[in-house]
Length: 125
Image (cartoon, rainbow, N blue to C red; front, side, top):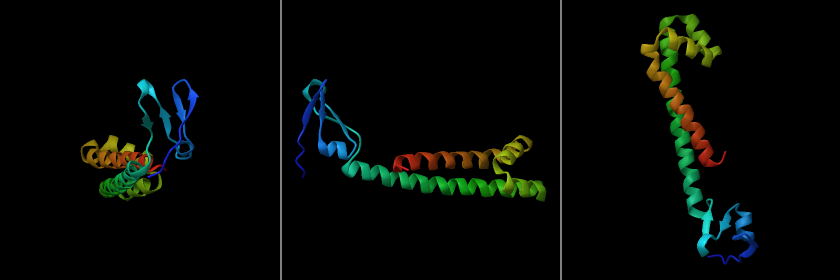
């Protein structure tokens, strides 16, 4: 266990060399020490949870994309080629053409992409 020496910097704010090194802001409202930020075990848990969420998001995105490619192939080889070369634009066009069969794979891909973004943010990347 580390000993942390705190120094007052005014306005109820407290500064610590350890807290400054770990990017933690300490404040003393109502005389109680409050820790804003993550460090120690809590920080590692968030990083691990972020990586897990990002991996699950990648798998969901990949499954959604593969389903969309299969549906585009059913509409013709030109649709498949277009979906491979200009994917986002072609996905939206195919979603307008065949909403009933494209809605679930498109939603899965979008949710997967959001999960990747949130997971990467949680992991600190």
